Amino acid sequence: MVSKTLYGKEHEMERKKITIPDLYQKKQQGIKMVNVVCYDYIMASLADQAGIDTILVGDSAEMVMMGRPNTLSISVEEMIYHCKGVMRAVKSTFVVGDMPFLSYQTSIRDAVYNGGLFMKHGEVDAIKIEGGQEIVPIIKAMFEGGIPAAGSIGLTPQSLWRFGGYKVQGADATTASKLIEDALALEAAGAFAVYLELVPDRVSELITKRLKVPVFGIGCGPHVDGQFLNIYDLVGMFDRFTPKFVKKYGNLSQEVVKMLHQYREEVEKGVFPGAEHSFHVKDEVLKTIEKK
Image (cartoon, rainbow, N blue to C red; front, side, top):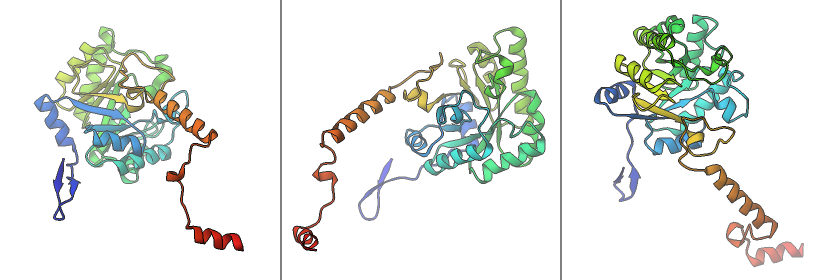
């Protein structure tokens, strides 16, 4: 949205920062929320311009940005670095920092301290941690410490080896019931939202209906309060693998390679840089230099 300044120039109007009450209101009104996973200033700026509701600065940065096979090796300091870049970019989007492996599992004190680092130095709006009933004491401590925290259940990548790979969770009555119990326990402990990953659509729907807080899902079907996808997947920039639940809305990787090919060819043929891309001096200056 634009408006006229006193000098007649158009400028972008200041957009309202999305808050937790805004997310709650959208759930109550049945308005679907749109969320992405993102790790850097440029992509976060584009997501913010597109009106995305929330950005999760995920620990999957270790895979997407650094090429590692899983998320386990990324540190708190590295995650805060990514959070800083995202926060500098956004004007309205709500940003959640993903607390990495061993930043909260060791003790409640460590969890609150590291969560505080995310808020203080990463400047995020909230944090997310993986787990259900086992992390209830941590969620409570975060809530009491003034740190908005979400819980994440279903497939939890930091527990990848326990699951034996990236597999759908809650596909039978026992595990589905456990997920519902976990979600309710997280909400009761003070979680501002619950994230679901790789949970069957009907189970996700049951959880969403039972909870008052927003439920965000990836690979969970259409009935959650908000969808989220990795921005690098949906624009077609990450091509190591494509999960079943990902829809690619473009293929930027091919476009970038095409542009780089053109750039290489123009440099090799002497087409680039041309006169319009170069800086020039006046002839008399050049003559003076040549005489010396």
